[in-house]
Length: 222
Image 1: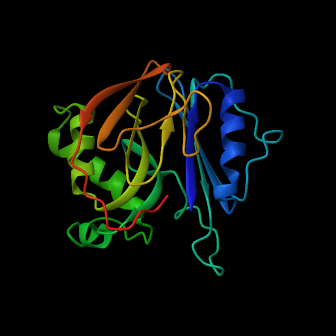
Image 2: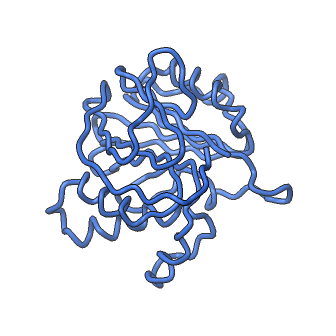
Image 3: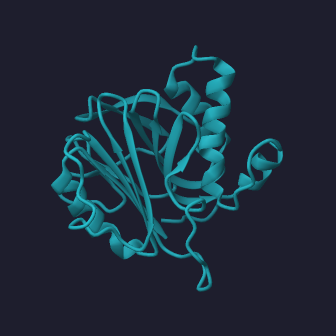
């Protein structure tokens, strides 16, 4: 079980992060973004102490992930922790992809990563390069999401532009009119419609930019 959160407000981000910790405190991930196109990535075992890791005010948006261990014997590793990255994408994910091994088997040039999420930034990168910069990012995202089976709540960051996208299939994900998102809801939050791709405009609010086909497994993983 995991959770993903995001906000342009540092205090609100910390509140959302803390509120979602019951869904996982084995590992934490953080992406900081600004309008100049810079990114800050943090992955660590356990939880983030915001007295030690102070959020830089030069960042205009923060994306976070909290993770529960998948087994009692699992050891922490940077490579198997969120966010997962490719050259042009960073991704955090809550859910289970049931066809990730099939996808990975068709791309033998990819580094073998045992975590299902790792196929998402690799697919996004594959189609980004295939389009040679001619396809809008939301169309690339749509192609990828149409391929995924299982359940997911996703935040995908186009690191070439620092545009932020969210979408869900099966797994829960909430958003509000201030540009925040969170696995757990609350006052002012509403559920992201399944099969809908939302884009964050100027780190302030969400806009529907595309839709994808829903192809989830017969079980629901929240």
